[in-house]
Image (cartoon, rainbow over all chains, first blue to last red; front, side, top):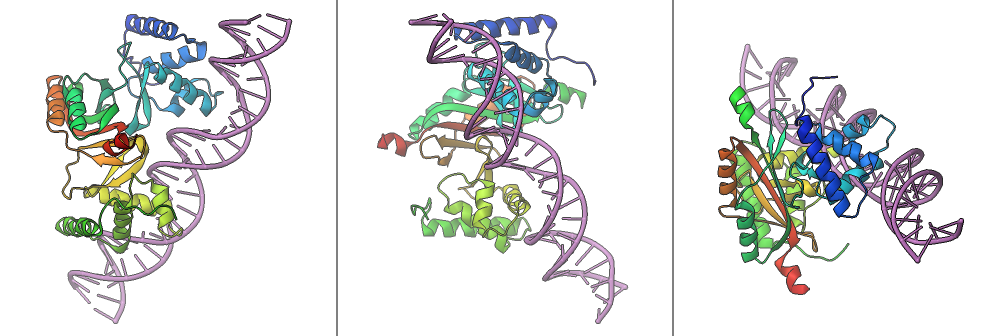
Amino acid sequence: MHLMAHAHTAREKTRLMREAERVCASAGEQFTPLRRQVFDLLIAEHAPAKAYDLLAKLGGEAKPPTIYRTLEFLMKLGLVHRIESLNAFVACEVGACDRSTIFLICDTCGRAEEFDAGHALVDLGEAAARDGFQIKRTMIEATGLCAACKKAA
Amino acid sequence: MHLMAHAHTAREKTRLMREAERVCASAGEQFTPLRRQVFDLLIAEHAPAKAYDLLAKLGGEAKPPTIYRTLEFLMKLGLVHRIESLNAFVACEVGACDRSTIFLICDTCGRAEEFDAGHALVDLGEAAARDGFQIKRTMIEATGLCAACKKAA
DNA sequence: CATAATATGGTACAAGATAACGTTGCTGCG
DNA sequence: CGCAGCAACGTTATCTTGTACCATATTATG
């Protein structure tokens, strides 16, 4: 084991889990033990988690399709996001999440902070529309130095 | 062979190649035959190209490190960009390109249009800074329907 | 209960990427 | 010349990431 450090308090984890149950139920989907376990692993992480790392934490028995299927399901409900530039996954911190997300990824500590960019997304959509392009989904991933790491340096 | 269709006119290809030579020279780097060939393949593509597809077009003799090294070099000079959500690469259409790029990717035809979003990037940087996060590099990849495909539908 | 739909298990492999090391060829210098 | 130093490229092997496909189990529903 390494340093114990959780991204969320026990209270907040419970809240996220409750919220996930609610989202699942209202989508008419099942929040099965496997899905619960994977989601639980994700909210316990500090940083974006790799599929194969999650797989290992499932006990070493599980095979790749298991974790990919489960992550796909959780993403479909907006409970989990994929960070393309890292080939990794994070639990969504705000229950009912829009499909278009913004992540600020710290190069130093590796954490990914979900972010609300105000008008940036709207502006992008409008600018693209003026060009005749109709945006369905936007992925924004910015890397840099987070507040905590800047302070530490 | 499939449909012949090039993203650029011969004149424009020449311009891009000249520009690449210039960028290379001014960076004190060599624009070798291999690098030239890979860049040429990229500007002949309609859509983002996969590393292994490019590799195959090098004659079938080349091995993976060859193409990845070459792409890495071209990206270092800003002549090529990686599209994270596709694991693919595109030639930069504007010679001296900023590191932070925006792509509009058409779900229908697969083409990726490099884009200038006006203030969207600045706004994002400022919003992040208010949060204490200092952005170094931003990736924006939007998917949707391009003007040509919208017209065709 | 029967049956369909959903969820999970598992094999095998495809696709994407890199580490490590060897080879070549050039450039500069004693 | 002879060789050190370096950049580019070649080669092998391996690692990581992801999926197609089939089997089985579980759950919802007529």
